[in-house]
Image 1 (spheres, helix red, strand yellow):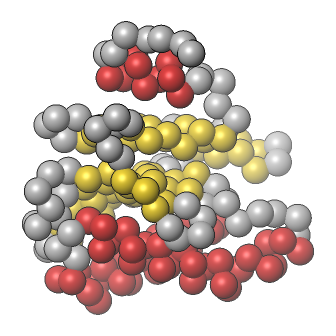
Image 2: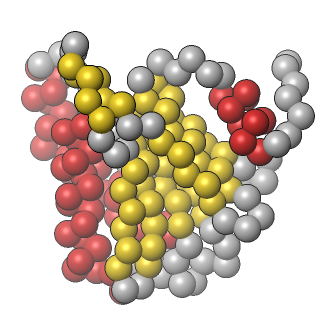
Length: 166
């Protein structure tokens, strides 16, 4: 089970992620959120999907940050760079994963505010490397694999909005 929730508020961002990792019958814990702070930026990435894919994409992204940090003046540029690394990992590993019966399924929530962003930003990145940004009508994003709590409940509770069903 993976559960990550990113919420954009008037004053900033909230990021929540569980730490449970399951591989077959083995259950361990590890962070599903990584924080990247370099001279020109601070951002976080929360992920769900195969741990090996996540670790490889994050490692590649850290190299990109080290080499091109000054190029990231807006968060969408950093999200694009992370998406490029996710696609790179897909090119390298997708067929081998498929042969092993596994799917390439790295999803990510990326949030932060870089020097030229006028406000905090929150994005959902898909396994194909494309993304969406939260808007005023949906100020939260969720990554849930086999979650038992419906997103509408979690979002309403986190945002302190009245809950309603359709």
